[in-house]
Image 1 (cartoon, rainbow, N blue to C red):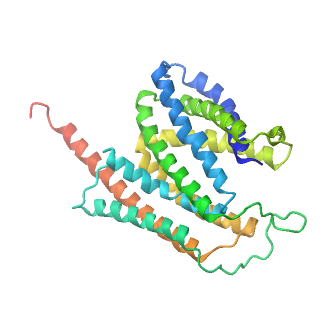
Image 2: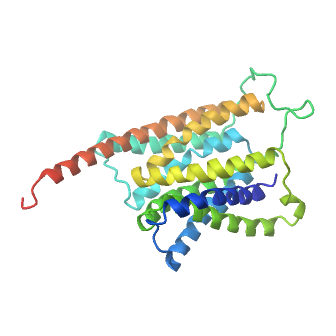
Image 3: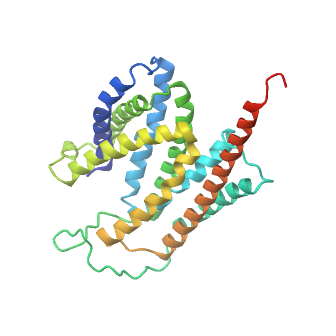
Length: 310
């Protein structure tokens, strides 16, 4: 299935499913839409839906699911760096928590560089019979071009990180998470459709049958683009953009396991070393971030107990 068509259909499904919930559940708390706010949502949709996901899914054609899922772990480090530059995050270099944040960020970046520049020997496949086979052969739609795929993946991670940061800023002016997620899916689907028409001139590419293409589109729309975006917006408002991106390493582990057993994908030593380094770095960053929040919460509690005249 054409990846650009998939992105378009997936977000149309997500928008249609979320619209009634957003309309009825948030009609009393939804801010009035203005031109400025709509332009902000337009940019948010471009960064989080059409531009990012089109690059992300295109990169799957040139690399592998495990590689792309591993590279996504760089999002937390990039988000942290941008948040520090915008003063949304504070780094105290004299405290262990500040050192943990910096060390975690450097380890994560080092792990990603390892996965990108060093493939290493293939790990011996202990599972000889993949679960998914087509006419007795393992499906292999990937045409390897690691340089092109790596560039697309890194660019998608950068735009994704900016999207998380922008979410936190937009939620201050538009705190209705369901409505915001619905708007992003509607606008993102329209943007992706325009891009797809330019890139793909064959009408047959838009055809979809009663098969895995349909079920993947429905699952991606309802669960990934609908439910998960709403949950991320809610968590972003509660904990901030850096916290939301901390849990990407779980997807890396799950994707590697599924790709190994389901498709018989080969695992390279460089990918394993890089992924482990990224995970260690990210959870160092998470520890520093959580310690920061506890200290700030304690300071705020002390401030609220001190009388104003003092």
